[in-house]
Length: 190
View (cartoon, rainbow, N blue to C red):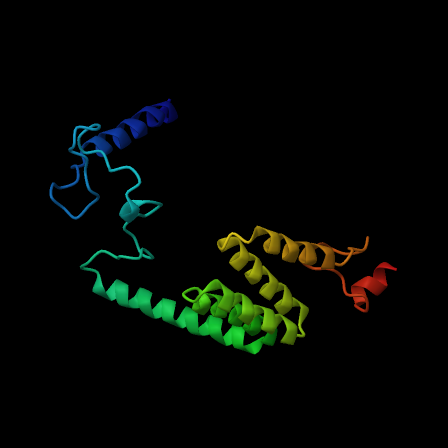
């Protein structure tokens, strides 16, 4: 009998406390409200870029709310340290650094004529010995060709990439982590 009373009293108490709360104060820094006759008054504007996604005004937003300067400084410092850590890890691996250099070169060449970018990457492709970096350069060439309506050239480079992919053996773990032929795992499976 006591438990039945709890099942009735607890939900009633929770409902009473939620109804007793005040609404948000008028005129506070919040999302823009709709007062244009296009929907219910007070409704948020659809697709408002400043307030989309979970926690629209919370930490991690590009334009943090004013008045929380300490939190903004902490967030800025955390992002800065994260950037330094990523660059340090990138610099330790020459292949990753070369891939990042290809992407950076593409960013730098976007303002130049497409012929200049194509010439640069074609020369780099001939001078590059690492297959991963060569594939990255080819993918950048595909992007450049695609941006400049040169689909035939883009498709040719894609054909080269597809044809150059090695055949996967039956013992390989998958496309992201194939077993090395001389590894202990491959020998143990034989």
